[in-house]
Length: 451
Image (cartoon, rainbow, N blue to C red; front, side, top):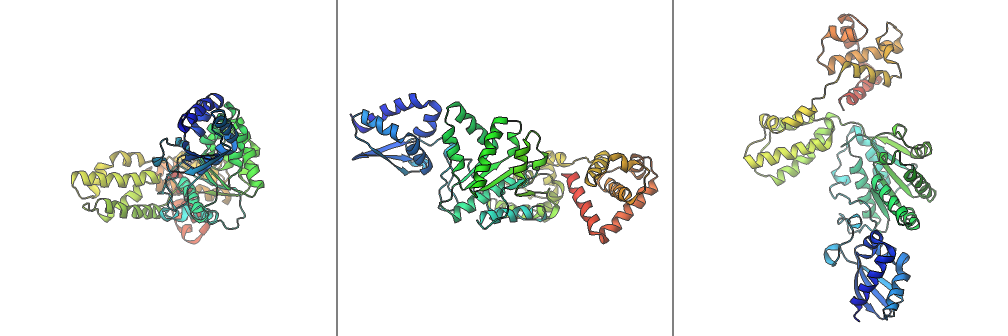
């Protein structure tokens, strides 16, 4: 009997004993190279899979060879990329080539090679998050663990997490960095329960040097998954291993998360990626413009188009970048110069969607929340400064962010006269230049309302 035939019969037995999913994940990706003496040599897509199989199924495989009359007592694994082996690794185990020579050994989510620190545009809304991410990625002494990044869609959370992973692998080739989404964590947990393989699950997640979990809000309401996440989190922190988490909101605002997990998530540094401002959006567009011009050397673009896009598309960086890509593709296909007319024609749907209508009621609610007041306080006749100044801020924002007339704004604020609104607007315009706190409050509220 040939070695290949023996391995085929062993695989049949393993599939019966391990079950379809475990077999597909760990045994199917292996390719028998040869049996050299008492050593069975295999090609594997990653060294992690090789180590895992050797530790968890090695004795069973050796027993299978002995049963087939092949005296194998040891397994050896060589890493061969998926393109070079007869059978590809399972999708969740395959990772793209990194910018460095380091090979990712852990079956997490694929890392996007475009998401590095070099391609991340830093501005005031994201500078703290960027600095914290760089500190973790450079593997310096840190006083915060976990690092918790939160913010809306398209503000750079995932970009920073990928950048951290790439940098850690580049500078520490032996580092075991595992990046995956909260949904993948839950899927692996459920699979481990289903196939009664919790020991392997725990070994995987508690043996890493850095664990990165994206969109942790997705485990909200999943009690069993939260329980395991809690124990995994604690085990890594106790070993002084770095944990990095992202979510679409702050830990205290995620409903359905257990209090003990919420408390753990707030242990370290919690960083908010604020909505982008005009300067940051302009910088992002300018950084992407060079690449578009390189791909479409025959396309010309008016400078004011970039300013126009940065002003008009303010909610989502991905949409902003997509708009620039669409413009260049359209211009290249039809052979036109990118000017404002063509931009408005090509991006009509995006521009309509970005025309967010801010209401006075929304302004009143946001201002009241910001100053820890009730909405009725801003509508009341009370003149205490702690209420009058926030009321003036709200009137100023109503005048600058809506198309409502002064009398309409006055009526929304408890039936006040339009002259009261005029006075409030002038007062806040003056204070913006002399009172840094007022200027900061107004800018922050404006960004929140426009986001």
